[in-house]
Length: 351
Image (cartoon, rainbow, N blue to C red; front, top):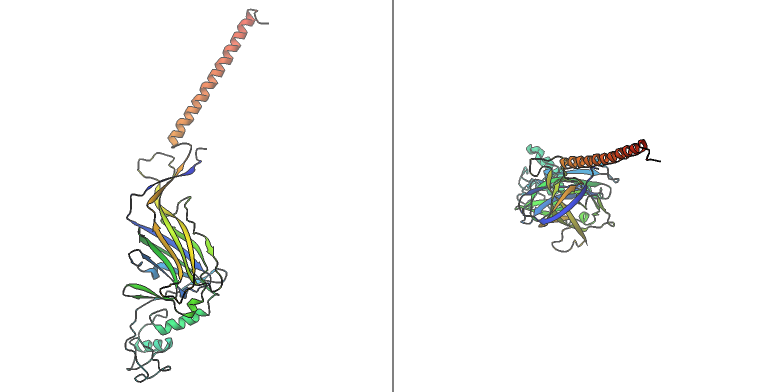
């Protein structure tokens, strides 16, 4: 009985408006290969989360959702295509008047590299290293996209990441297609017909702000959304993050103020899906988690029948004392009753 407890809650205005917190997110896309899905985060001021490629772990999934292997990272080395040549001054691999850049590895002026293999060969001759997943090499990116297109609806992707963010409004987004960086901005190439035909069905395994605690309200965890075939568009989750102070029940008094407490967060959510409007300007498809912080803070604490173990001992002593006192009274009553009966019997007054 002493160890039983119940969860109680109190609301008050949060006096703290600064600081940072950790966000943990884990989402699976059963019908989108890893090479076609990117994860990024940006706050209200337009500051992008740094190093998201390194912070994100991707795993390839089979049709049953089982892990196949860890996906290779795509890189953007921001290679400069250099001078572009036309058919009139190009030689060596012209393709219908188009002359692809060799990204500085040309042996002669006018050399063309129209395929990823052409670029690799030029780099090998120069003794340079080329990353196969370099999205800034257009030829390799196109061939990689064509290979991945054949895996669509047959291979999925799981993305997991942890990031530190400030306590300001922001969003975390999963966008299909290539991601490029230009002048500090993250741009997304979503115009390919393969991107337009993807299915945005997804499973949110984990979306957590701060540390987990008992009775936390994280309603998106475990949510599965199955969309119709070729259902590409924009899925938005509007997340209201509520600062929370969790206080575990202390069975023994502690001299430390705040011992057994945890400053963390929980959230509520609404959602909205916009069907694909890929031809409209500024429409970016994908999965978006738009979060903002509530000015109200919740105190969640465990409450039991006794405030502390000392209180329990005092109550136990009081009960034992009461039982002992009542037992003494009953014993005294019975004893004196028996004594009275015996005396009357001795005097012959008791029939």
